Length: 594
Image 1 (cartoon, rainbow, N blue to C red):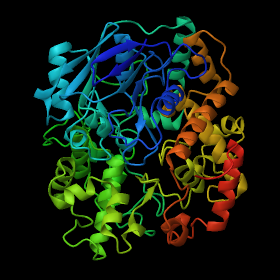
Image 2 (tube, rainbow, N blue to C red):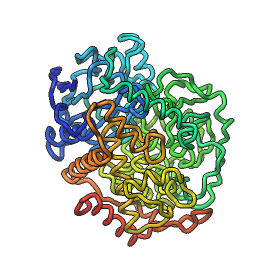
Image 3 (cartoon, rainbow, N blue to C red):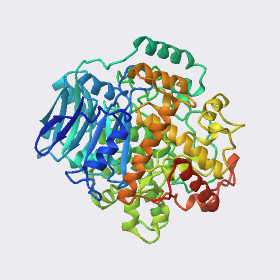
Image 4 (cartoon, rainbow, N blue to C red):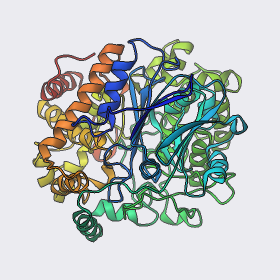
């Protein structure tokens, strides 16, 4: 059941806006509400701004790939639609509590939280939680509402309106990107708590059980699924050397040999944290929880694949314990590790170039905890500056510092370098909500020589045939748009990309069978792609309305080639990039860039 909540008045209404077909109760519906119920140009912190939180029609179902909730609002970082997804048990908690979606507007008079319980929503006082981290907040709320309550909370960063503050669910699963935690903070909303034991409806339980069994049986033979479920896990970055130019080093300024150590698997020994909060129904166990033994709060150490790169190599740091501690601290304070890492890297390069006297230095792992705390608290001039994100900080600093802000649409770029993978670069530039590393599959996966050959037939079904990873031409634009449309469909339905086609065991046929088994209506590949297109069109229309853009990358990726290793010489030629971008637009039916 969807609920409409006005925090200013405290009114809660039930709405039938989820009854219409085609939006699946997720991002497509949220974007429509965002467009229809808020005026153009509205400040993201205005009480009239809309916050949408949803498990939708599929999220939270006990099956592989369905443990995902979406958080959506106008982003205080980009000014366009900010969409972040949380893995883990929160989506299942929403469904168990009797809420498929929440549309929240207004601003509570005091710091508050929403309790969703047994099909009812109430507003509760949270002043006693002010200043608490996400773990302590979750502890208090579970003491009140039961140990199995599911909690989405903000930390001090959200309360202090850090523009890239995150929402963290069940201590370790972050909805990290685009500052949704700051939107919570602007609404005086500390948390959403879900308590209940209702079962998510499934049309064909037997078919769903068969799909789960076949998925589990194929995991060992799928290299990415096997890596995800194994130790130390998909996000651990262990043992294998990282080719120069593949990942960000020192704010993407080092395009040759990084001079930094690659962790060993044994470096994670003794750092895993026991948790019962894995993704319900999914055997992959992708997001593991790691923190050094001495970390102040270890349970918040959910390790996403971007954390080591963003808080490590991008800052010139290769100390695993320093990175794991920083990641856990970010999750407890409620900070997006990608934007924090990008903003700190920007400040470090500015300091190195004499543009930010007294700024932080690359490689200074000892200073990292203090920097994180200062940003979350907006403490001092530097903490307050960096809490704005690197694009706004660059405008304040001036003197050419904008060249070192590695942002698209105001959001810090993920740490996978687009120079050797131009399809990723096109996705960063053109995705209308801002850059996300999990918006489309990596070019190297479909390289005819180095790629994942088992995934080629799946990709070919949506028109993304294998091609050399470094090729940048019109066909690259078209095939990247097709991949973006596919993964947008997964986002629209709250299906996890880390379980899905073309590289994971949820093949296209299994995906369509999965949706059919849950909803009971026939669902085809065309339906999935149609949903992906509708979500992209909705985000694009909202971005155009709000003046978002442009669809381009920082000049560094066009001007500074990779200098060593297998990707030596890789650079994004401007003319070729423009032609590929035009083909990308045409494939999606878009006329021009914002």
